Figure 1 (tube, rainbow, N blue to C red):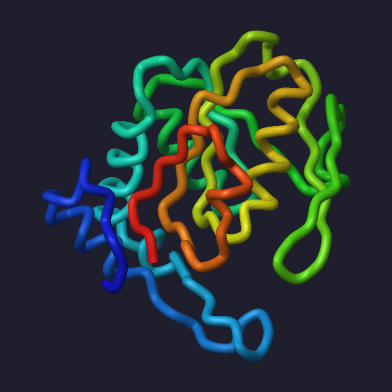
Figure 2: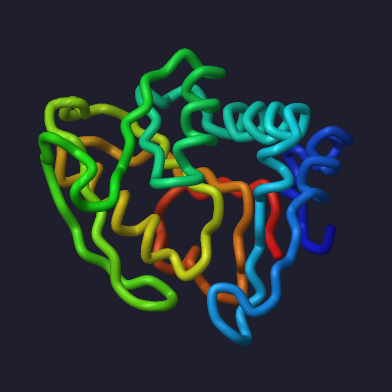
Amino acid sequence: MTGVVDPSVAGRADLVRALDLIRDIPDFPQPGVLFKDISPLLADGAAVRAVVDAMAAQAGPEVDLVVALEARGFLLGAGVGYARGLGVVPVRKPGKLPAVAHRIDFQLEYGTATFELPADVLSPGARVLVVDDVLATGGTMEAACELVERAGGTVVGVSVVLELAALGGRRRLAGRNVHTLLTV
């Protein structure tokens, strides 16, 4: 594994082993891009447990609800919600929800996208942890945080497995409490 493991969890051999399972896929989704694939990590039960436990521990006590981003964020967010005894709200791509509270268009590394927040599931004043797998340019996470805030929630933290520091996503989340397990 190349990168910096968060110091709060760095001493955990199970977590270091889990993060070592992240593999590089060159030239995906386009030539010149080195994709960080967490599929091997997700396929390993002990690795998933180590990652979810670490993300849940980083969250802090002030969280009321987990908001998880489509699609890999669903897997991690559900685990974090379960570990903390919290509900999980999915942020979805368009056309997947029967009732939409808010919708946002945003820029990705390779184009544009849209997210939707389901209606009547996020109470005003809810203290929310937003969960996804990777923080790259920050557009996806920034959009999700804005959806939470439009619905009256407060984003108390952002949690990801992997941060791609060279892409500067953390700058777009300035002032937010960002937790990463591994920064490369």
